[in-house]
Image (cartoon, rainbow over all chains, first blue to last red; front, side, top):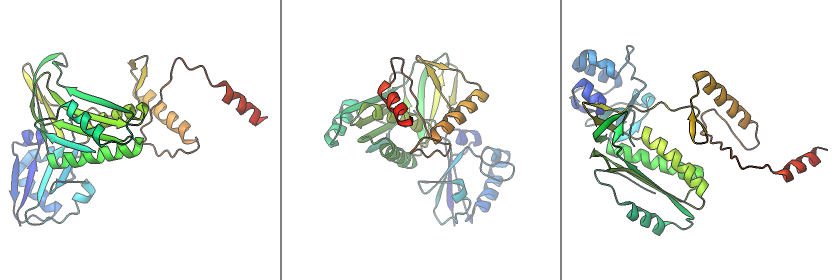
Length: 91
Length: 207
């Protein structure tokens, strides 16, 4: 069950990865475990020490913004695209 | 209502024509044309780069526009934001507000500007002499006090004091429902002479 996780702007530059494809990942805890393996110490750019998403992170699922509370309960499906994004700074 | 996040923006005259053509009760049109500045934090700007999660950004812009139309009763709103590279003098943000009355339009534009800079999934990277950096969103100020055009610096204690006091005062007014996260604008005009007829009426009413 592969899902794609995409990173944006300063997050992408800090971790040095623009996207990853994760197999057998259908929950938030599996996502956290997989990203820990891939990112190592850089996981702290996205998650705090308790494994919670940092307050400043926005999350999208299949091109829709979702709250962090909703995101941690979602069961991922085959082909889902997850966006990990910083807070906007347009204008 | 129309929003777009794109590498190229529509010209302002075209957008004005579009909003006029589609409006039914327009008394004024307020235009914001955001342009890349030549100097940022004292350094010469070489270019800006805007990145975006476009689909989410456009969805958020639509929601912002709908919310502001509903809140202020303006007729229509257009928002276009550029992505990709932009150089000094380039236009990067167009906001057009059409409204029956100017006060609502100006107030709506102010809120739109603040929200467009902080909410949608659009990120700005500045390239200035010798360095480049992603611009972080300024923390929203709880209070801005501007006297005769100049902003007065407020320390955290005074900010909290004014914020809570003003919202408390407003909360006792009939028809207000204050939860603490309202956007309140108070303007005090120097040429106001007072409304003596109302004051007199109030006195008579009480006696």
